[in-house]
Length: 305
Image (cartoon, rainbow, N blue to C red; front, side, top):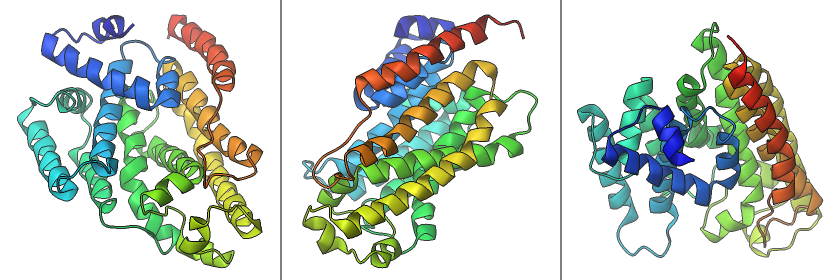
């Protein structure tokens, strides 16, 4: 499958193919929902999406690998500088960055978006909580919104100005990230971080120590219900942008939209018990959403345009 996609994308250099394949494996192992959605894209588009995921995942591993004993701030700074220098140079020896550089140059992705992402990754090494929702959005812009912007040229939006589509891409990236924050409250807390605004915690009578007890009581349920409601509102704002995309990309994004939105349903179904476990959308549910989308996606590729 990956070889066919690389062939379709016209990627022939052996070292570059190996780099794209490394990114695809990272996506397949660590981003199962995201990876499933990419299978609905035309094969020629998939390697570039995998490259963007691989770049983001590698940064996450630097930031979140608590077993690493080296100075992670220095490691991330050094790697970030190398990435940006490689993009300017047009090549990289790093097995993940090589595919990213090729993707950025092929699709004319602004380097400023890479810088914004890397800035948010650096925040993860020093910032453990956010006072307000606006403060959190500063982080989320770099960690998620710019990924939606990076995806736009790959997904395509024929006949629609980029300035019209961008706000929807930003909202969709934010919605995906907020859903992950809600699902991962307990996991993030064990890393010392809280990605729910502290003003929201205070509104419901919750603080860090309250969450550390691991007990989902009335105040915690009300807090999480509030966060879910806001996240769903962002999803509603993002959804109209899907129909502005290239027809061959819409089913991929509809599927991702439904699966990531399904995270919120699963949190509610688990009675908000996210402090001691990681809820997920089951394989059966993922298949029931993705398979009809795959049929539609294949039809869209065959439709004369």
